[in-house]
Image (cartoon, rainbow, N blue to C red; front, side):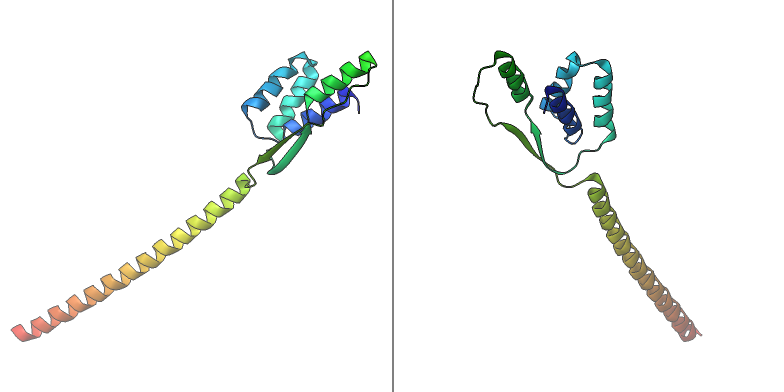
Length: 140
């Protein structure tokens, strides 16, 4: 894979990760790329929400090392380095669904309490009405 291909793969992988300091540094290091590639990189980051799970991407330091060793024609052992980051598996849709379930459960509980309160009020009013009619008969 060429250095250009590795760069394209790294750029597409950037949009899949949450914004961190190291990610910001990667974005800033893209200043030496053509403006179209930078704009494409930024658009991909904005348009793609981060996905949960494990993200593995090639380390740009390896690409630089490979290009230097190709120029020197020396066989240098290449380190096997990969950047690995575990991200939050919950997506915003999952959190919203969970919150919606909790809100619905709370609304149902409030409706049940309101129903119980209404029953108690009706019971008290009917009891008061019965007592007032009972006392009315005694007064006569």
